Length: 343
Length: 219
Image 1 (tube, rainbow over the protein chains, first blue to last red):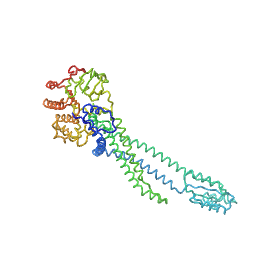
Image 2 (cartoon, rainbow over the protein chains, first blue to last red):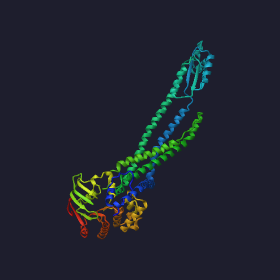
Image 3 (spheres, rainbow over the protein chains, first blue to last red):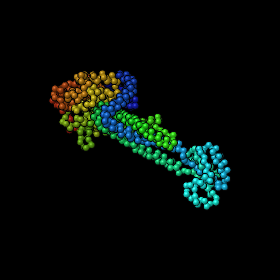
Image 4 (tube, each protein chain N blue to C red):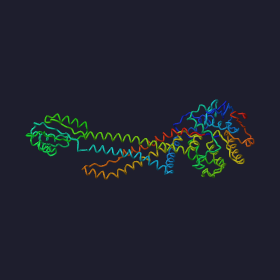
């Protein structure tokens, strides 16, 4: 009786029942068999991977309706965090080029003559870390105050202008720490009585960005979990559907890895295709809002342009999809395949 | 080849399926395993296939105690055994050819090698011309023969059959039995569980008779 042992995978253990038996029954064939075994081990393993990958994909295509439904759920669950991520990226960009604020108001010494104030504002203009400098003289200040406050009658009674000259500067850098450092430096100048940093907007923006980061993180995690559950459940159903096949395969000597492989590949395809559709969703959504965003930016005289996903982030989205697909499949397979044993 | 040493199997619910079963089948021997339903025939075969483990005693195949095989070793143990079932367990989502090729794919044979071996096996059971059909279109007898082709396609050392003629008429049963005899002539150790006593009595082979889990004849 010929009992040439077919190729086995490299990762498998040396001490196997078949091998013991082989040496025992047909010693003369041992060497030849061993050679054949090693030569075709890798090939056979690779071939099974390739054919399993192909068949798993074909199975998805053979049941188009359920596959499309599952893929749609996966794509939406992946596209939402994708879109939020793009939104976040644009907020970062927006806050980076946000030029209107913040400002530091330098209240000059009350006793400083007008010419000195003028000179001081000139020196401020020479600084490279300031984007703009504006001098509000005592007279301008009073005028403005009268106009805005409506206390013009009261002010008329004062014989002396109580307002100091103010130099309003706008730093290039709008990072909070840099601003505070600059404020400190400017307030120590002899001409300056007090330097007031208009931080409210900076702080609001910073905490808003922080909040948005968190929200994206939390929602992203929840949606990733839902992707895992959807893939896991789909794989569980497909294991249930192929129960007979699994039992027969185990009965004729299929290893756990062999039985698992098609389901792992199914998870892979769900992840890959789902992520690709999600990527399309994101790109189409961006196309749709690109024009209105451009118009809005034009109204604010901003050269802001909507940022897309870009190459790296697109790859990341696909990568996350594949990872979640594989992981979800692993979870389902680990739980359910062991329970199916031939009866 | 197959050796049972004082093997007992008690199922968790307390039912004793086998009690002190002790016998040995030589390499290349063919034997029947008979007894009423529930006498423990299927349990005995399941112990050989490592679908169950004995409660007491030792089962050895080719001088190897099966108790030493871990869960990971089971697939490799099963690859040297061919099994035929009464309910044949064919897969109806693929052709006859693919059904028979399954054990070879699992064991990792080369593609062209698989083609040759599958056709040789189908030729032996006389169904070579049906290789492209779906087994669901075949008669019960033909399906059973496909099951046999699948069991012998990888040239196992041991061939087990559980009621292989269970729902076949006498003429077909004879035909199936002749197939088993033929494999036995080529050196395969064959053990057939059946309750078809008329058929067994016409055959010149050893008969292991189980009664309520005890081996009462054929040792």
